[in-house]
Figure 1 (cartoon, rainbow, N blue to C red):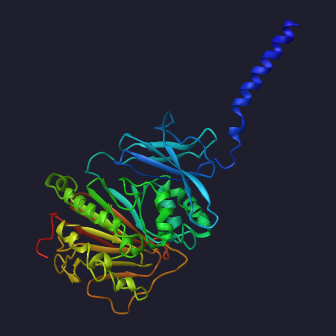
Figure 2 (cartoon, rainbow, N blue to C red; figure 1 turned 120 degrees about the vertical axis):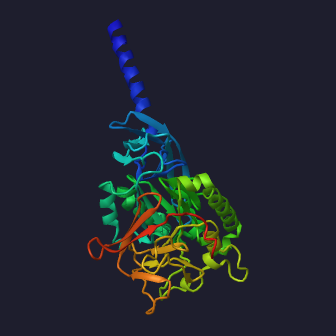
Figure 3 (cartoon, rainbow, N blue to C red; figure 1 turned 90 degrees about the horizontal axis):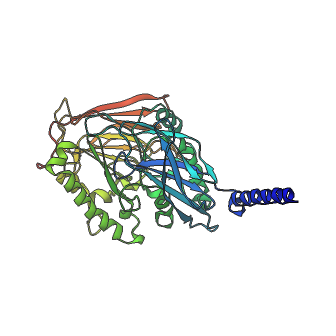
Length: 438
């Protein structure tokens, strides 16, 4: 009898443990992590992992390490409800992997007790400023007709980039089909965005519901819901802005005013003598260009980011480029590639006749919005303006290399021509300072 009671107690205990382990809490059919992507935190050795689940997992965890996943960090999730009529919901998770070793390859996966993602890897940048920064830069990539996507995935997996910069317009559009298009796009970019910090800015195609899909899905540094921010990588101070408050005035002027004041402060800080000596390059990017010569878009005639708001003329940004000596400005929006001569207020200020990009007298602009989407390409006007140096309507993306404190190299990769480089130039500056003479 005692033996029978003993076995019954053991069986009851096992059943109780099993019930705790596989109880109702594990009824979680949509707890598998997906849409994994990473970004820089406040420092380049702080990496933020972001992902989605469609059930609440109750926890957000990243396990990571060098060679093996022997460290763990916890974060949080937020409920995102799309503004479409279905009110589709998902939980977006964020975990910060902080104070990592520089110049080190980490393996990681993300998830919870209900399920883990596949294993990914990333490499942190070297310490300091004296190393070559390698970036892929593009805009206007959709979930369909994304010609550049496979090339970017391949290069990212081969370790060719230290960061990815997507200059606005994602998925076409993230809110479409009650945000299913956004989910599909984030799955498509996971093979590169889970391996290389995927840095972003909003474009006009993110406008729906006051940019809610963009604000929810990305995790950029700073406290402005990824709308504007800056970060330092090697010898470069990158500045990301939103051009959209100039065009969607129905949301008010608060974001525009806050961004403009922040930009003044940020560029002023970047120009402090000790900061400009350490990181002399200032590279600013945003979606809608200050200059373009396409024939099918009114934005090429009304450049509010450059000239300021219509009627008032307030918040024009081009004077800030002059005042703070911004070296390179990158745009998208036009589905094409265009390189400009050094330009300010539509006047060309080449460094010299034979070396226009050596110590140029004004900022250099490029437009790189030809990664591919269902809206196809944008044609150019037949006669290029005097400030336009090179134009292409082929699909492609831009490679950026900051070799040191004096030399940047830019290449345009043409995917219509199977990865051929169709344009390249060196931007060389022996002195980095405001353009006082303009």
